[in-house]
Every structure is written in C-alpha cells, then in structure tokens.
Length: 328
Ligand code: GLV
Ligand code: GLV
Image (cartoon, rainbow, N blue to C red; front, top):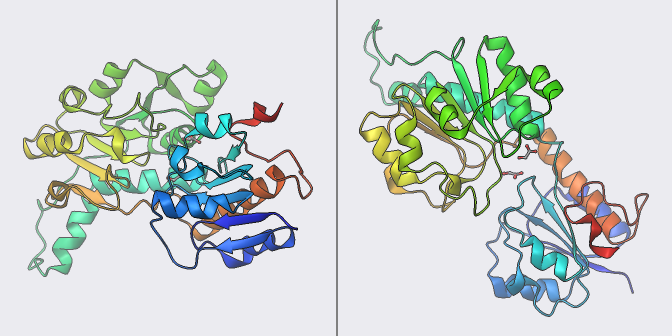
C-alpha cells in the first residue's frame, strides 16, 4: 500500500500533483481553518503532510498519528510548527528558505517606501474624490534615499534588503542575535549596532526576524519610545513581534511617523485601531506573493516531502530540513 499524504490547503494543482507519483493524496479543496481535531483526524491517516503557516502543528494535531514521519511547511517562518514536539515524535520537518528571499525583500522595500511616501493614504484620498486642485504641500512624506535604514533580523531576507539599500545611498544599521562575519557585513554595507541604538538611529526600521517567545512584543511601548518621531516602522516578519496597541498609541501621539504592516498578531483579524490609522499601509501577508515565488515555495515543499518520506532523487535527504538529526 502506498503512503498517504495530507495537503492542508489548496496550493498549485500541477505542482502538488507530483505527490501522486508516490503517494495517495488527501488534498483539501478549499482554504480552510482546520480545527485541532480536524487536523488531527487528517494526520492520523497520514505518513506525511504539506502544511502552510496557517496550520498550527503541535501535540494536539499529531496525537495518535502513528505513521506520521514528515511535515513540509510551505513558508520560511515555521513558528506554526512545534519543532521540539515533532522532533521527539521522529517527524522530519522542513520549510522553504532561499526561494522567497529576493521576492520578500522587494516587498519589504515596497511597503517601507509606501509608508514613508504615504502612497496608501494618497491613493485612498484620490479615489475618494478629494483632489480638487494640485497643491504644493499636500501629503508630504519622508525621504528614503540618503536616510538611515535599520534592519532587525539579519538572515537571508535582511541581507537582501540591505543589498538594495546601496542604490538608495542609505546608511544601513542592523541588529541580530549574532553579529555577521565581516565579509558579509562588507558585502551588505551594513554595520552592527545594539538593539537600543538601532531603534534610536533608524529613520526607517524594518523587521525581518523570526517569531519566537524571545521576539514576542519585542517592539513594545518602551522600544517605540526610543524611535525618532519622523521614523517609519515596517513589519514583514510576524505580527506578534509588535505590540499593536502600543504602535497605535505612538502613531496617534505623533511619536512615530508611519508604519507598513504585512503581518498582524491575530491575522486574519485586525486590531480595529490599526484600521483607523491614516499613516499605516496594510497588506494581507503577501510579502512572498509573486506567482513565480509562491510556485517555487510549493515545489520546494513537495521536494522536501517526497525526500523526507524516502522517495525520489533525494530520498532521505530533504533539501531544507529543520530537524535533520532526529533520525540518526
Ligand atoms: C511567510 O510569511 C513565510 O514565512 O514564508
Ligand atoms: C528568515 O527569516 C530568512 O531570512 O530567511
């Protein structure tokens, strides 16, 4: 009997179809918020699963899933996976790094520039019919070129954002759990600074760090108080890194100029206060969402799942494992 795999969300049929060469595929037909019980029922029947960042996978979901050996996450962030629990159960987990790096960096820039130059606000104003005559001083924003860029989280995406800053003549500062090798710092033209220094010196701060208990509400009222009143804050990482009420307070009190947000603590629900902020650009978690990149992410996740279950050209060696040592 062929192994069985669960596909938690509709992805690209032509790419996911490759799974059928090896497996019986139980594919979810419509975008679904699976309850823990529903996910558990699907996983109990499965040898492997393809899941997205919208599918929490932990103890409740894998309980009694005796055959389950592989979880392939379609996404680079994997805070939806309880990795210690999966590792303890001998389940090989994987994610999709690298293929989304440049696309996500592009979007971070788009959002940061939209926030600085008030593009969302200007477009709403125009569509609402407010433009009666051109005026010299309407919708004035802050400059991006020549400013100081602050990058919090200097992984692959942070580095790709830094490389783009050269063309804008910016000074780039970064903070990361560990300092990068000097060769990488030089290639990115980025200087390491402490967390408080980064907050205090950045004209445009962008968040690109993983979400974890350590980064939960890292940008809280105290952190926001260190930022300059003309600064912008852009988040393409995970919503829970920002205390959204503290962000709204700072914006309302003129202690921060603008924000660009692609991710939210309770997404897809939004803090209603965010919707009231004029100077916030809001997008629905689409930073990696170019067609080519979303296809590449699914393709890599499919490769990971096939290999993790012991099939295909990379049998036993998935291209991007998260807990590679667990079967040794
Ligand atoms: C998207 O947020 C991802 O982690 O890939
Ligand atoms: C993860 O956030 C990365 O930079 O690839």
